[in-house]
Image 1 (tube, rainbow, N blue to C red):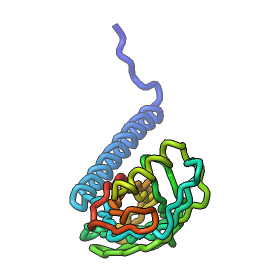
Image 2: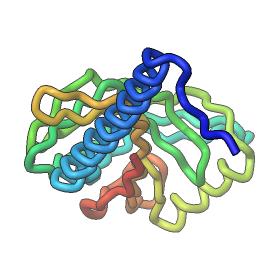
Image 3: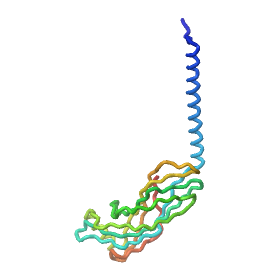
Length: 204
């Protein structure tokens, strides 16, 4: 039986050096990941909270054939950053309205904004949709809801956000918010009253 030895002293030294280098890099990566985990657990970013405060319908007209809808709405949405040490960059925010899962207005793009710790921002965009094609059963459903005296419209917020911790800024995260707006009508399609402030579901 033979025992393997390094034929050259320099070759053994190189092997030892590479082993030590690999071990050092592995330990360094583990330490860095552990520090990131500790920082993340201590900060624990919480999703922003959204509330719909008001909604007014200026126009909601269904065509005679019930396959086209024209609408003008103004909504007031409040958002709060619940984090103590984390700021939020809203880089792109689109707001639009849907009825029974179908989009009925064009997206209204809001200006980018930074939201500091515990800050509250309020947005009041106008949402428009002129001669938007809809399925005939949706047009009939809107007319039936108005005759019944109530209608439920969902306001959607679709955007991209970044977290800010100290001087560090994260990559982009997709933000998707759904806000129910329950409106009571006065027996026709031109007079609506918003019922009450409602919280929104938020996905990040």
